[in-house]
Structure formats: C-alpha cells, structure tokens
Length: 160
Image (cartoon, rainbow, N blue to C red; front, side, top):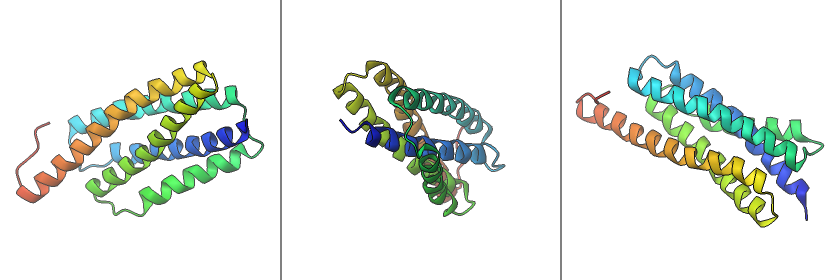
C-alpha cells in the first residue's frame, strides 16, 4: 500500500482548502453582496474551517509526508490562482470560489472511498461530514451565482 500517495494528495487538498477559506473571507468582505448572503457565507466559512481541522486530523492519522508543507503550499497556490485570475466582480469571485470548493470536494470524495477501502473508518467519518456539508455549500453557492446574474441581467432585485 502506498500511503505516501494518500498523505501527499491529502496535504495538497488541505492547502486548497486553506485557499478556499481565504476566498470565502474575501467574498464575505465584499461590499456588493446582500446581507443575507454574507450571513450564509459566514456560516459556510465557519463549517469550512472545521473541514480544515478534519483534514488536518486525517493527515495526522494517515501520516504526514516528509514534504507536507511544500504540498500544502502548492495546493494553496493552485487554489489562489483559480481565485485570483477572476475579476473583482462578485459573481466571478463566487464562481471561482465554487470551482475551488469543487476541487476540494472531489478530492475528499476520493479520500473517503480510499479510506473506506483500506479500513480507515475514523478517517472516513471525517470526510463523510465534510462531504455532506460541502454538497449543501456548493448547491447554495451555485444558486446564488445564478440569482446574482439574473438580477444583473433583469435589473430585478434578489430577495434576501
């Protein structure tokens, strides 16, 4: 079993999630967002901070690779490239955040399945919680991106 592959990939995903946290923070502080959306984003941000703690615990259980810090840094850099290549438009920023969150969710689903396969039930539990919440987050954020775009196109305000 190549547990180094699992831990190395998890370290990069952890870095991506650190980037997601930064992207969410930037969105929360955007003056153009509706107060209700800011509140919901804050809740998502808080849950994502728990996701980071879950991933950190999973990495400790599986074993940190020797180059963990480099891999975490690389994961965060990749995430920030996704986020930073967008304009300061809130819809673009939201869509970039969705892409970054999807990248983490996709990797976490793979980890869940692999940990289940190798009998790491304690790690599976950490990813199961993350995945359930992430699915809700992505649904909400995609819905908000569509509503914001609709408001821009039609000029009709979105209800809070």
